[in-house]
View (tube, rainbow, N blue to C red):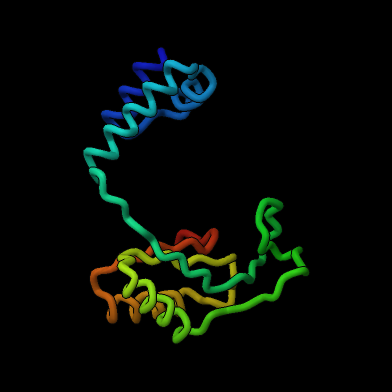
Length: 147
């Protein structure tokens, strides 16, 4: 096992076994980093070319039930004003973003149990009905497999 062959395998298969990835992370040196950057650039050019895709980030809630130390909206932070956007407010954000050329919206928030699965589904459906060609990404914390 060597770094260059692992980078080549990653480039060709988009996958490494756990032990291979750990080996790569611990053994990569400057030459390996340069090679990894080169292969990443080749991948980007093959998939996206020189096109930049902008994503409109919609922070629709800053409530969170988790206490993650790295996060500014964690449940222990009592120094911020909490909010939840209504569907109409989310749609206004989408309208503004769409008019600015965004074709991907990221619905982002803390792990907020106020928004049930049904509510999230409804938000997505309404956005997709109004903007059928946009992509929607969710960044709303951990969810169960069933969810």
